Image (cartoon, rainbow, N blue to C red; front, side):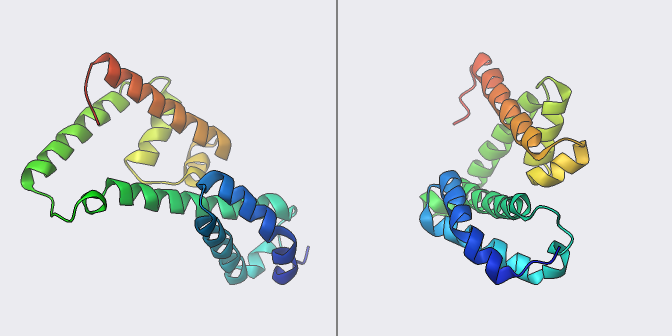
Length: 166
């Protein structure tokens, strides 16, 4: 099927922006996600000519952009510079390293195994949901669900151990 990107943009940009806004809760980021997605579609225009159903494809491309924005936000929030204009001290690095070891050990206890595997790929190897779903031969939504459930289980494990991980 042949698609013209300008027609796709006129038809789908606004619904995709609404979709992105619901996930990001920020209109500028939602617009950026849609614009970045369409920039990639233009870049790989020959690829979309082989796509049977375009709407799910476009939604997936936007979802990938949303994931990238959320990851950047998480990195910004984890960065000490986000809160302070100070450099990280060696003591801070030790505390952060020890905290990471505690969280990693709790993650190793997560059951069932497929939840743990998805979370390890996501948190330790910094892989996206799409990549994880392909690696584990599961759907995108299952990957998201497994990671969320594993994260919840890690929180419960840490609370049971009465560890203050904040």
